[in-house]
Image (cartoon, rainbow, N blue to C red; front, side, top):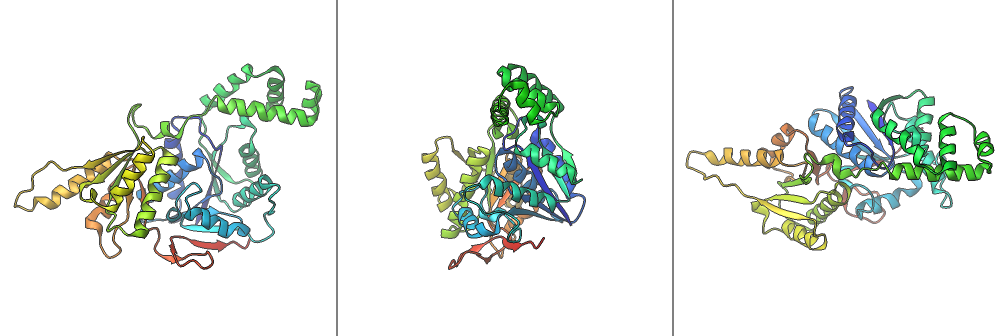
Length: 386
């Protein structure tokens, strides 16, 4: 089994980052039949990581590829509650497993959540065999510190940063205020904080503050939105198709709404294509209500213009219709009936390239870890004893 983690800035700075990230994830997936990808941070970069792992699941259906959430054991019920209410980065059913370190490894302190978060990240790093790294050392942020920690432990890392971006960020240093420029330049030269403070004529605390403000300014000038990384052309929207979602009931409608909001908020998916047979369903009602709330959302029905003859062409027409909508989409939502092959769509999804599937069925029904809750969740919760 391979355990892989991601380490990077919360934001992204390169237009080709998703292609590099996907290639790195695919390379890791090829190493073993069982691969776990761990997540303990949020942000644009980690949202792209989730998308890349979803795409890897499509590329390697024969492999056991899992999305693993790392959480503090003391926050277990809080985490699951937030997952159910869509208050964190991805819906409940995307997670295959939730793991936690044993008690005492991570400090549970409401006064210093930064400390406990850093400890959780380091525990995640320690149990990793490989790390996909998107860290520009010029920024000197928490990702940079964790990157150095992983490097000191000798963990294998795949670097997906861009040397040209590094140079551009370094060039922007000259536009910083003089004292901030001095701090960053001396940091790059690996000089101590005492030396930096002395050169600037300030205290070490002030030098730290200057470094933070300088890094924030450098990052702000370099940030790209996640939307640019998915667009195939400058004016083409990110598209999601909706296939084989079965009969609408309360549970499926809740999952469907959560999926739409996740795609819209996280990946800026604003174009949803739904098969004609669902135009009078509860799913269409959810889409229309969300479109009223968020005018950016556009809905289109996928209408087949071919004429069915009496030679059994209907089956081939349906298959071609599905293939066409898959080729035009970046994401796909589906929720096949448990006792149905979903009209061969599963096989077509396996053959589809560069599409990320949100399976609202998850891994099958499992008991919810929340007390006095009778719902079903799609992941299992494990406390790791190491």
